[in-house]
Image (cartoon, rainbow, N blue to C red):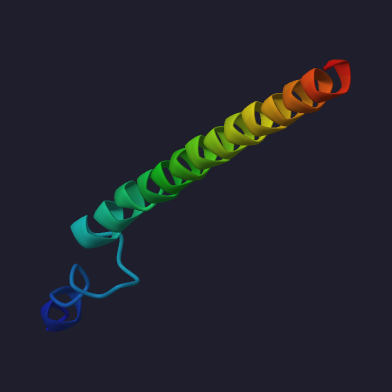
Length: 66
């Protein structure tokens, strides 16, 4: 009978079953979180760098004037 080959198809990784759809739905969400975290880290680093360079410039400017 052709029923035994049809039974393992939902469990097989090639079949478009619930498991396959679930992994596809979850995967795009993870890199987005990582990207946003990296983005915030980059923004924070840039802000710190700008603030530090600004302070250094102000200090040098004040030292030159004094």
